[in-house]
Amino acid sequence: MLALVLKYRQAFLIGVQSNLIYRWNFAIRGLFSFFRLAVVFLLWGAAYAVSPRIGGFSFGQTLSYFLTLIFLQFLIGAFNEDYQISEEIRNGLINQFLLKPINYYLYRFTIFGAARVVSGVLVLVPLLVAAPALWHWLSFPHQLWRWEVGLPAMAMAALIQFTIAYCFGLLTFWFLEIQGFVILSMAIESILGGQLFPLDLLPPRLFHAAQFLPFYYQMYFPAAILTGRIGHSAAASGLALQAAWVLILLAAAQLLWSRGLRRHTAVGG
Image (cartoon, rainbow, N blue to C red; front, side, top):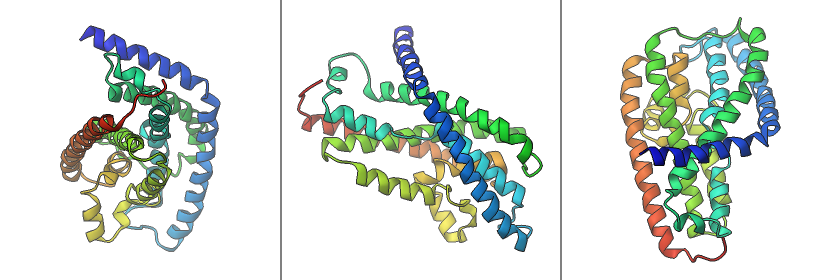
């Protein structure tokens, strides 16, 4: 067990070092995310000028939701892991993992975790700079249970984010180009993941249906817990469904890996 931990610990450290090379990339991306926050402020501010509460929530609660969403995107969101996996398959670099006692999924997840640590820390800088100006508008709940449920929800959301990207990357075993699949997935995630608007503003039937899809648990679910958009019972039942999606996606990833290796021709690497 210790050897296993040390093996992936080394992969994590390598991942941190390689991502620090692109630290300005993450920092600039984090800075530009606040243009989106400015748009949110203006658009939702105009909407709340007509009505003080929308969907039962105040302007401060909605702004807090989008601010939390930005942070979560850098902390647990998958950026280009699918393309990295696709490149390793196409260029034959994946062959080295077939000859060594390394689990490819765990290796890639370790690299993903290292990248998220770097991007999560770097996005805190513009967040802390903007906090004094936004503090008057923000509204966060103070119940301790939200963190007790929210932290595992964030961890499983990261697993869901990465595993979906991992599965799309493995499609390279069958398709030379996966860009179309990735773009389609991003479009669906933006809508059903609550990135364009809080999902609780959907009609009740659509909102209920969205709760049975994995996209609901990628960003909206942990953000809704931390910002008070869902209650304790909904958070507890959602956590169980989120865990079920983690298991389903892990099974799908293993199936794609085993089936894909049957088609793989070990050239290059």
